Length: 223
Image (cartoon, rainbow, N blue to C red):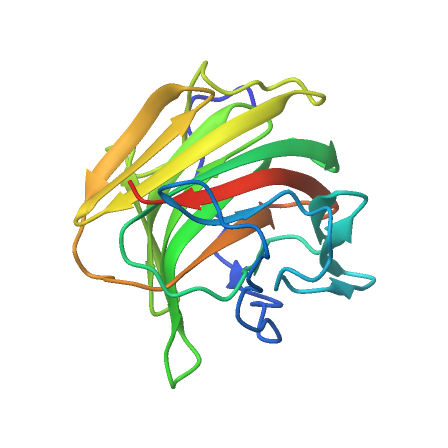
């Protein structure tokens, strides 16, 4: 994207699928390494993630990776393994596969869905055209808390080539939330509203649908 800032689409629908059908993450017969809470290379489709393939939305295992496709404009879609964590650091490899480069994708932590059906969580997003944004959704209301401008900003830490793989690390520790991209810290903020919840993978669109993002080698560990 050529301009220096960007605003969120005003009609974003959080969690079109929302992984409502996900059960608890399945335990592995092999104990994880010390400090690791959950890990998944998506080589098996029995690890608790949503499995849906549709005309407008896909959240499903795909040839040893996890795929999220968002066919509609101005929509965020996520999937989760079914965990309940407070402090956690999440690593994942993410790669653009199709659609507009003016997109958003990344990680979430402390996801909760209230009895009123509204969602709350912290998000850590990048885009294929090189922007990042961190913040929270509180009962379906989204606020960018980093960068300080309150809108996505560019960073050279992101591999903006359409064939590039970006390694994301989101840390949720106490009131401190932070994102590193390819080993480079890009943003952080302090907030204490959401105490615990699920982790998740997210992809979203702006004015144009058709975004497809692949995720691989997810590790959730103690920060």
